[in-house]
Amino acid sequence: MNNVIVGTAGHVDHGKTSLIKALTGINADRLKEEQKRGITIELGFADMRTPDGVDIGIIDVPGHEKFIKNMLAGIGGIDMVLLVVAADEGVMPQTVEHLDIMSLLNIKKGIIVITKTDIVEPGFVELVEEDIREAVKGTFLEEAPVRAVSAVKGEGIDELRQLIYDYAKETGSRNNNPALLRIPIDRVFTISGFGTVITGTLTEGMIKTGQDIMIYPQGISAKVRNLQVHGQMVDAAYAGQRTAVNLQNVKKEEISRGNVLAACESLEPSLMADVKLCLLADSKRVVKNGARLHFYYGSEETLCKAVLFETQQLEPGKSCYAQLRFENAVVLKQGDPFVVRYYSPLETIGGGVVLNPNAPKHKSTDNETAAALKVRENGDDIGRLEQLIKDGSASFVPLSSIAGQLGLTDAEVQEHAKKLLFAGKAVKLTDTIFVHSVYTNMLAGCAAKLLREYHAKNPLLAGMFKEEFKNKLAGLAKIKNTKCLEAIIRFLADTGAVKMGVNSVSAPDFKVVYSKSQLKAMEKLKQYYADCGCEAPELDDAIRDFTNKQEGRHLLLAMEAEGILTRLSGNSYISTDVLAKIIETIKSGLAENGSITLAEVRDKLGTSRKYALQILEYCDRIKLTRLDGESRVLY
Image (cartoon, rainbow, N blue to C red; front, side, top):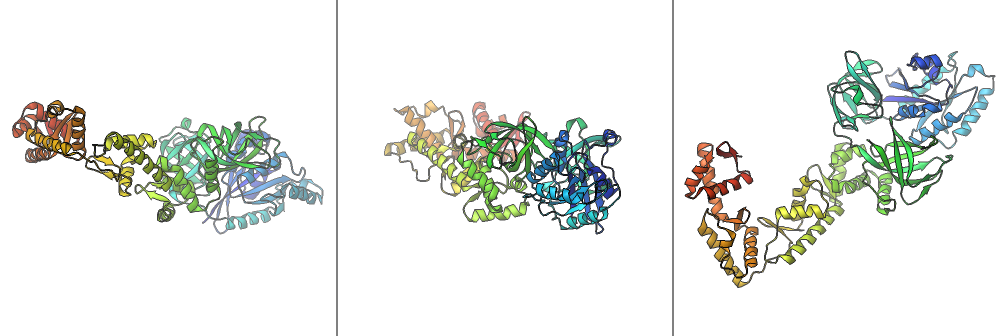
């Protein structure tokens, strides 16, 4: 069953609150000051249900220009609007501003309600309707039905209520995927004996009692103690419902209006977002590159700086791609609509849609960014997924996070990702992380450059040692997430971009060419280390017969890279074959007794304490053993 949120809009004192009371029997003005002054200051709430069970939540917003920010905190996330115009005044300034805001927030459905018909002369309502029709021309309300009512006498209320019911049945269902849970918080308070409570419109997903959730942008973890929908305790709430959430493990002072309750790890706070920015045609202002603006999304309000792409000034009625740089971290998703107001004087001038909610910093002259944003704005699901994968490749963004940004299920994103794999546009690094082929081509280019330069300087070495290669590749390609390095190197090896040796990485076509004298010297070194057994010699002793000491050191490195020798520590090498037998001896002792001491290893190898300790410390480093008191045990 669908859940529907209806919002009111209109000028101050045009009868929005009285209309809601006539429709539902509920006075949405909850503050004493509101009831005393007869003016709505804060958001108010009411509800009703259609005869066939559709729940309708109603949000009453302030009409006074001083409380526009409160209006904005409540109007986001509604399915349909009641644009209220008083018969005795007609269209007024906040009528127009509210209409602009609703258009900017991409609200598609509404009803025009002419109130206070009981205080005007017959025939005056028709004149007001003409006035309204002119004001809504070219907006989503151009073809909207008009209903004239008197909340005092009840005239037209039943017909309006039935029309709301009919519209509610036509409203499409929202996505109840729990992973998409999101509630922009518009109220925070405490209840004695229960603790902290937040309220807001559940715009996406669902929430259950006992569920772990997170408050953003702070990243505060909490648990749901109780839930209410329209004043009734429930076990679960669903998208499209006004919801009150009683939270455990969080204090009222830690949360405020503008924060967002969402699924754990589902959102990422950001100080920059790429957007499509649009100015109202009747705006009296222009936005210059670098201008400060007031930004509104959901219940959030913050200041931002607008960096415009492809233009230095945005004129009324025009649009452009831009980056908004926020003074405070916000949490957004791709596709979220927003409103901007001029810095001073404070007036609504435009809005737009979020295209990249976690954008890196761009220059205003970056043409590639504008092209990418065009795909995000106009592409189909597969095209937008490809762009998000491309933009997130360097950060190794998991598909689950991308799914949340696109508002798709994990299964849908996985299916689209398979098509990108088949088309050669994406690469699967791990089960959860896909990167774009443009990125892997860049990585392959970095690897080729590193190895080409290395082989030129070290022609006798089979390749660059793995750890050195990983570190240098991470630096050259600016890879910050080192957890993915192994997967990257595996990919480069699987695709033939690099060749993996026992301990080294080389260019695929590289091969060491040794002279006869070098091959002979390597055979001598191999035998020398085999004869030394477990007693790793000093490097200077190993190459004492070399006239060219540098060549001797390079040959030892080459033998290490090819796996003939193993480095125990520093410049101490041991025959790899000998070491393998020693390790088997140590394993045998561990299997027999559960532990082994330095003295036991010394005696088993028939060597000194110095060499036994060197070998055991190597075993600790490779995580074969670990020190436990005076003995070694299996790691």
